[in-house]
Length: 242
Image (cartoon, rainbow, N blue to C red; front, side, top):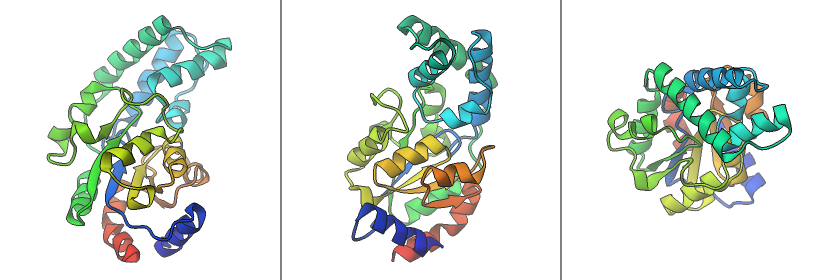
């Protein structure tokens, strides 16, 4: 299965080889078990402002910047973008609720994936649509020695959020590698779309409530049910690359 996925990737991207030197990790739902709190906070904020949404929408929107998510809700409800003031008010309200609910729990299996990646000599970077300082600033404490601010791409760094490829293209630039020299690890369809659009071999981990098909339809090259399964299979992936 892994070798077939690699062959399909090479055919799709017209690359001669897959030679990973870096792994670009999404944060929410990959490194932290935090998406349930994001979805709850967004949904309660939407209800408070009478915006058309349901909680599962925010799993589909995951990877967008906050501004983009708010504009999506305003377009859906009022057929217009939100004003800067509306964006600021809603995002502050959502962030307050998220910080109230979030328990800061690391994603099960993530530390093992990072250890396996480090053991194979690959760089580790974060590429997230999040602007939540509470998690971004905590990464070094949760995963010591794995991430530095210079090797992160966050909502503060990009003009276009996922599913646009810009965040992952910026991640490649920060890693100093080409598209065929990296992996993406994602849990969200928009993040998968962004990784694929950037030409990177994209591994999906389905840590949320969405059907596997949503991630496969977004273009995931490989799919795992959780981070622990990816950790167990990491050596097999690297062996297939050879």
